[in-house]
Image (cartoon, rainbow, N blue to C red; front, side, top):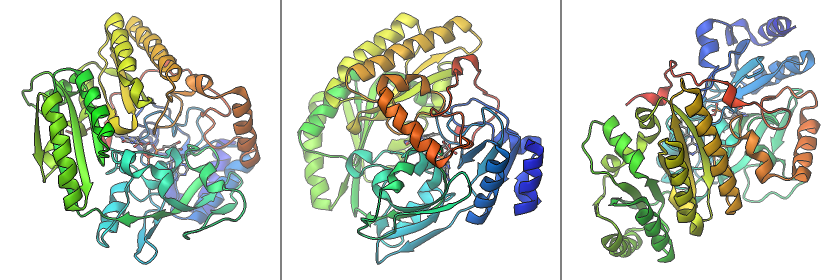
Length: 471
Ligand SMILES: Cc1cc2nc3c(=O)[nH]c(=O)nc-3n(C[C@H](O)[C@H](O)[C@H](O)COP(=O)(O)OP(=O)(O)OC[C@H]3O[C@@H](n4cnc5c(N)ncnc54)[C@H](O)[C@@H]3O)c2cc1C
């Protein structure tokens, strides 16, 4: 039946867009969660029409479809766990700026940083900037409601999506909202699609809101003898009414791994990377206040107008942690900011008790931390310890009033924690919405609405190099 469906899709949209060779299947089998499941075929859509036709056939034949952008997702949300088709949207890649209405009309496959670079030509900015900005697509960003480094000051993807063109499972086209300043017509289906991880429909195009580009910015890298001193500093900065555009935390383990990755010699220390932006006078004034705080709490800091060299360590944290061990178990929790130290005291104790390294980094101004337990994938006991410790860490997060995901979504790696956060009544509503839009359950069946996947049974694939793995 699957082969019949694939043949029908080939006939409908053109054989060259339907790939079944080993290399294409392998590339579409994996994302940044590093789990890997081979699909039956990859369909490379080049237009809304291709999406519509492929979905219509898949729905009639009841074949699973996993929409995919760049595969930089961290929790396996795009993975064809139960086989079927990977619907690759990366080729729908266009960017048109409207400098009058301050919007960008983009294809689902447009790369995040390309949108911002194009907006910059008009003195405008697209603020959401996940660390994967040079790779991840806007379709994936919308599907995950991606955050980024500037989220505390500027907000997340949801805050900048004016309208979406999407296709639901039976191939019907949906125009969700319009690129207008105001829109008050009917239910807000647009926001239902944002963050639904491709489980409600396939995004083909979007209109994004842009803002005026801040004319000036200044970047500071500060070191701390202890992780807790850095957390205290974050609180002092926010209490002083300074809202940095970037306030990134790296714990001592992440800094050590990143320094080794870059071949640098560094003292063991935690770090904060702080960027202030805005009008020059405003930035200078905030910088003065910031430096007073840093003089008291940090063990040293440097400031630069050219930020790039200061970003070096932060940019490689994700890849560098594999120097600590060959496998990672990670979450992107959100904490109420006043509870940060309480959580990390508990978390680091979990690391010591389990004997596992726990590199942590993240977006400190919005309490969103990427926590990890590193383990040897060939050691079943270590792996079990990592999973048990992570369960406790996630339970603690929810107990303290936090969230199990701030920006990566749920995917297959967090579905088992959903019941800690979401009530039965809420679940029931989510399932009804899913059933209304995708009654045959063809879209991303691996996600939480229809099934759960026990990832502890699977091994991560380290052999496939992903584009962001390079040094
Ligand atoms: C080094 C690194 C750093 C990262 N830093 C951040 C960060 O700072 N902030 C952050 O939020 N995330 C971050 N991420 C995670 C990831 O980049 C984001 O989740 C991103 O939004 C995924 O985009 P993608 O195009 O790669 O989507 P994919 O990984 O291909 O897919 C992710 C999800 O979106 C769905 N999807 C993709 N395209 C569509 C579409 N057109 N229509 C419907 N559904 C679709 C998929 O089915 C899947 O559920 C990082 C990842 C890496 C590797």
